[in-house]
Picture 1 (tube, rainbow, N blue to C red):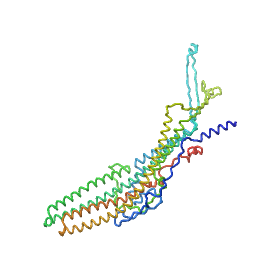
Picture 2: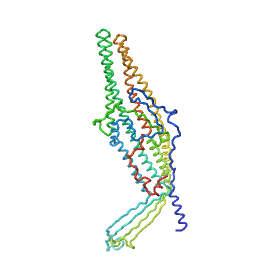
Picture 3: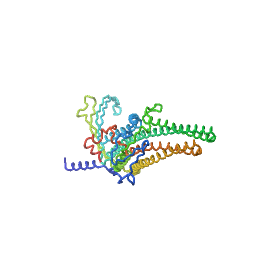
Picture 4: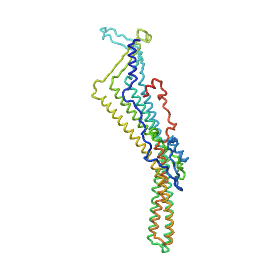
Length: 504
């Protein structure tokens, strides 16, 4: 090979190794030391209340994949496992990931030559009149066998940028699957907690109704003895009726909550779930992992999905730039054309051709230019959306931390308020029976206790729900999952030259 040939080959390899457009680099984690201006305080304990245990933030601690097991509820664990195998949203996300990967594998084929073979036997009769011999009309056979090869060298990297975009789309679907998984498990845990809260509120309301029915008997006796007026009796009857009227809406919410639980596990509303939930059957997680801010962008599937879209937009800009440059093509055919099968592939019947081409768009009314500008704007949009997603992720964690801190304070104060209201009501009832206070005073004490009792149940449930929200905000430990198959045709499974070409 001549020196000029070596130089030409070296120049071709140099061009083939580069790719126009920006090379994507992952954004660094935000340079912040925490999620809130102050160090988060550990949620305090409230003795005697459901979910009143003290909690402690373990900064830097990893999150286990099955974080819901920390609530120590076997029925909840069983429902989650059922949902992971039967929920159609997960099935759809798995299928979307497989589709994106197959599109990636299809795109990788553009890096290689395309070969096709054809075989065409034919029997033909022609008219001799076309050649000035009307009396001659020969009939003959013609057999053609041919192999065609075509190849478009990726001189400016447009094909590799397209593959890069397809790989980013596959990464996006991968993290969309993780986001679906996290949303499903979180919604299921919160739905179970909401059911437990509603059952607690129903039980409290039934307790209130029983107490008011007992009080109605007392007032009735007071009226008979002349110690109370008929108006007091009617007021107590109205109070009892109002309390009873609050029960059907709570039962309605419970029925709807059960329907939601059934749907989350992939069932129909007519299929009754065996499991039911009460706050007393749930344990409040005490040790709460709190990821470092530098880890959050790696752990949140929505952030990773936004990053994959950012990467795809960067690659698409490279594709648009490459489309403006000359397009190279190489093709060739080799075969045999003979007047019969016996002569096929003999030296005299061999045919072949080699062709190379370069195409450059000279005028397209600005189509390629505007496509490049559109891709550049898409890259700016993806970058802004990524930053927005990161900010929202940090906000979610900060909101969960503040909620847990204030939940503990609320539960402490609400427990004290309920106890004080209960004690006050007991004293008011005794005084009313002794004729020491008016019925209006007793009624006010009763209403205060009713409200405090229901608010206490809601405060107890809030600690469980916001604890689940913290696990969700931190990413839910998806990186410990094993039910998503690795990409069998990823870079680690490709030949070294192709793997290197796909890596940037």
